[in-house]
Image (cartoon, helix red, strand yellow):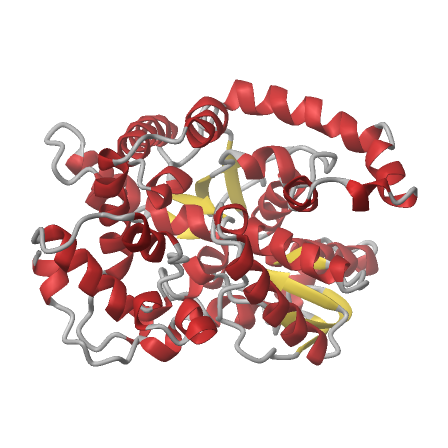
Length: 426
């Protein structure tokens, strides 16, 4: 109730909220949703389908928090509200199967991913599109197919430790990203290693629980947080580096999630204090003036949970500007949500598609040769939207760009070591 009362109804959040900008409806704004939450908490209204729909349509992007003069913790409020509603209405068996039965269990997720990869490896997906059969599939099935994460990309491969590491870190491998974007993890580890940071192997990692918390399943989120805390405690590292913005934002609030658990609250706060987004961590290192060479005109998409939830905007751009030959072009409304938002593009297709279309138009208006982001959900959503527009524009994670730039610089150095070249450049 104290959090709800912080809202002074000023309306500063309205123009920052993607769903309000789409509809112009007060009930689709943070202020309107807070009013609904307050009324639900006080028993003035019942959680009817109409009321819960307005809350479910929230992206959880937390753009409102960045502009709120009163510091309303809206992200926490919407998660708590969804948790309360989750306890009052019938549980979704499909959601539980997906989030609890598959995503939260690494072995099951890995098995499902390997079976799913046969769809691509066998050529069935290519044939489906080439023959036009894709267009006759039911609309919902077409949507799910187009949003399926890539499952044939290489899995994570840990690089050898540098000879005299300046720090020891763990890299969060996560759940879906582990099976769909393992090569992004590899790129992150290579970049860290080239800069003298040892990436420690941390076995038995599982999902961080972000998807569960966003969906209102706080019990599952707490269970996964406890597992993650115990796992990373055993690693005994200086920092936990995360290359998925949504995961990083959630893990930084593990202390808050377990604040009422006497056995875990202090441990959760201690572990959360070690969490760093990869761009945040890299930008804090003593870096050379040049981070490689790559001739490309690129535009950067702010992931919501990096820009709004973690306040990390300047660091990714600063890293990109250290690459020789890279021209960084700002897109319009770079920090407006692309419509991915975890499972939002599946559960709220209409709103997600509208936001995706706006984001793709903004990308194409820049004339960029590549799109750079810091979150796998954004990468998938934008690449899907670009393909629908007939564009083959590559969508890359920032660590992929840095990794390629450093590799180019290293090959040009010939007999010089990469460290020597960096030292001479700085």
